[in-house]
View (cartoon, rainbow, N blue to C red):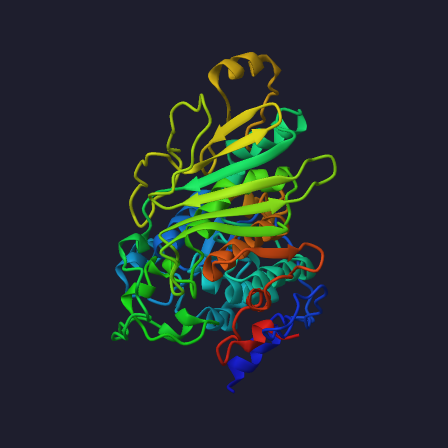
Length: 478
């Protein structure tokens, strides 16, 4: 082991050693990253020194959004493929900024020059990069969902609490109009006694053109000369390089991504999950899976999440629907299905309208609401009921900052993030449980107190996931 590796390991957060049969830890005692005191906030008069980890596609988009706030200096660029076409725009924006392909080497060389990092990379790499950053006392903006396994999310939440760093998950609608409206309507008693939510994303997904009868991973192809494939794989077991694993295709595979639910759930279910205090479900039931496949996600899915009574709130079911042929029924008086204009680009282009656009319907004992994705606001339906309720609706405050500025201002101690790990973590764990039910094709019973699956030993093991690849075990060790 070279001196850089030794130095880096002194900074790594130590998490619980998680064998396949290990329960999710309820207490975590990491080794202190440094004996040096850490100032938790950047001076309010300074800009945040920000390192960008992942600078293509979505990573590049969030990089530009954060930079455009005027609240940060870009001090480092990191991407596993600095020669790829999709990384060139951000590289050209910051031609004199140090560049790295391995985030660990970046921290080795420049940890003392970094205040915060972005993590805009495939889902399977969120966990190790975030754990490394927090171990160095760095604030973290990580794209949604937080991580790929239930246990990884659990450890990220514990790490953020232990190291007292600012965290933000990148469901940017959580700083837009729907966030403030939902909060105000719950506080005013407009949204109450909710018993059911239907959430849907029925647009075409990348794997919809694939043959569901595929019986193996794609064959090995030559690794591009500019790519660090080993670092791209990270904690996941070895896979030979194939173009169908990269550039957004990773989202299709259980080994790397979280499918339609992990991709869009955080933009559709987030406010209901937070302000209705849902926490974790006690039952997850995949009632419809079209072309179930052990390698990649079904062509269509319906998953029912059951949540118990919470205080004075009744039990609630969320029914998630994805797939081109799996469009849920909408209530009478629904009206037009609008497409939120604020949805960011998907694979470089705007999302195309569908028969039923991404969104949700919320059913309470007295009112029915419809809403879209991201920051789009709710409407009361039918229209006659909306007119009747108009004079009773509370004033909704305006956002003081968008999601990106909110993160940077929080790094300065001026605001608090709206989607910190304490809020985004349980939401991400809901998606982890849903993906497990998709992958196994079975109903799961979940104990909310012990955080274990009680009716399926294999599924309970999969909360932890497969052992990390050799050389990456330290992120999971105590």
